[in-house]
Amino acid sequence: MKIYENDQIYVRPLIDTDINENYRRWFYDQEVCKYNSHGKFSHDFAPLEILEGSWINEIIWAVIRKMHKKPNESGGYDRVPAIHIGNVCLNINWINRNAEFTCIFGEKEYWGKGYCSTVLEWMIDHGFNKLNLHKIWLGTANPGMMKAAHKVGMRQEGRLKEHVFLEGKFLDIDNFRILKDRWSLINV
Image 1 (cartoon, rainbow, N blue to C red):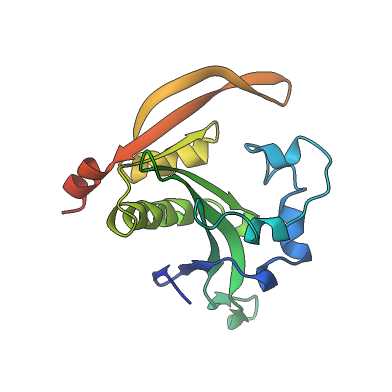
Image 2 (cartoon, helix red, strand yellow; image 1 turned 90 degrees about the vertical axis):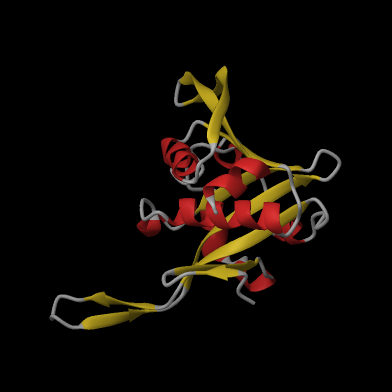
């Protein structure tokens, strides 16, 4: 079941068959997990717990790159099957009507193509227009995520100084937010 889609990608609920060896690999890849906690400690990753979580407070969707054709060396095209490239989540606080956006894009071949900002825009729209949230926010040290936040109209609302330890130094976490009334103004 596709929830949102364009010519290149779509999002749908995360399902059992998404959780395979390729998916598990994302959570042990230090480059993929550079800006999240998954790469910090050696642990037994139990991916099915993601599906068994409290669906009332989290919406987790798989980001799927649609089947497409890719040029090959002989001048023709190779068919590339649809592939699960990442997950996005809205972690919802129903009392305060806000949600934190988080994501992981495990397939590095698809980094830097604007998919994160596209999906972030879809999640914001869903949060405001389907769930009646008031605020959607994110906190990150990841320059790519900061770029996506700016691109969709989120505003930086603060900085947690030297908040995370990464690769031998402390980094700041920049917090971004968008309110429902601002989203309505920029998406007229």
